[in-house]
Length: 332
Ligand SMILES: NC(=O)c1ccc[n+]([C@@H]2O[C@H](COP(=O)([O-])OP(=O)(O)OC[C@H]3O[C@@H](n4cnc5c(N)ncnc54)[C@H](OP(=O)(O)O)[C@@H]3O)[C@@H](O)[C@H]2O)c1
Image 1 (cartoon, rainbow, N blue to C red):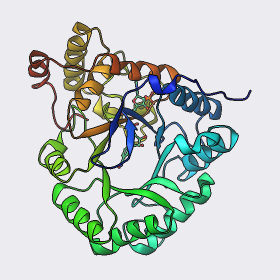
Image 2 (spheres, rainbow, N blue to C red; image 1 turned 90 degrees about the vertical axis):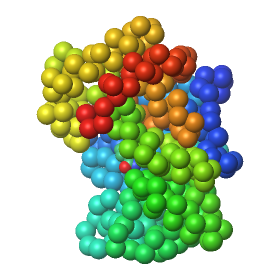
Image 3 (spheres, helix red, strand yellow; image 1 turned 90 degrees about the horizontal axis):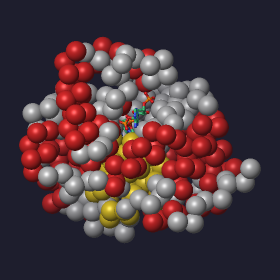
């Protein structure tokens, strides 16, 4: 069946400007880290992508190694683009990254010019694209001069293979240096992708302040702590859940302490007429530094429920105060 995108898609999800750039993102974006690999159902992927786009989610985030198997999420995304979504290419913001292990040898990971350039070429080929909208250095490389890593990002822009560049998992000081180097090369550091949720508040210790000071946007990943900030595990570990597959989220995260806190947060969410996931998304979006919350979804239903968070984003001071002692570092 041919895919016809919903004509009212831009009325569905509010957007935010990324720092002081021309880039604008939906308040909730969709990541393809899990659920889009060669092991995952292709028709479900298609359904989730189409529903997302129909609901105004025009940003899809990838990386060279997303799968499993590594690379297969980009390959599958390329197939979905070719089948139908690709006709909306000028509306889509597609990102990819390089930095974690992808192939053997010294250039299959980290931040050398060789590695980043080869990886971007591979990603473009897997997705069958001429360019990506955002290309990230996925992690800081302590053994490569930052000038070289940022030089490779700048070259990606100058060669037309990326429109914007970003960094991910860099701390405040590394980000400041990266931005200064890129500035000198005439390419702004547009966006940062840190992990941020009620269970990992690291960016509050200086990174958000630095980003705002430098007018760099933040798209925060795993705002639901991989599913821990939902009711997914309240009655055990479902067979089809991320924890059951033990792919990054381990079953030993589902502790008594975790369940107690998550259920208390769930109660606070219910008082607002929301699910825990919706409260967790409203909570990350309360930060002025945040341009978009980058979620994952294994079904259309999860996606729809999560996007409904945007109908009730305001958190009263008393609600924030009640959340504060429960929003604990280290549970995610
Ligand atoms: N830059 C980096 O280093 C980095 C690292 C990690 C992620 N990311 C990016 O961030 C994206 C999101 O990461 P994430 O998948 O960890 O995000 P997340 O939104 O914290 O977790 C998503 C998972 O939570 C569960 N879930 C979502 N909505 C739910 C709901 N309403 N009810 C119950 N369960 C729900 C699903 O797991 P089930 O499978 O159990 O259904 C889903 O796959 C990734 O795809 C990637 O693009 C970047």
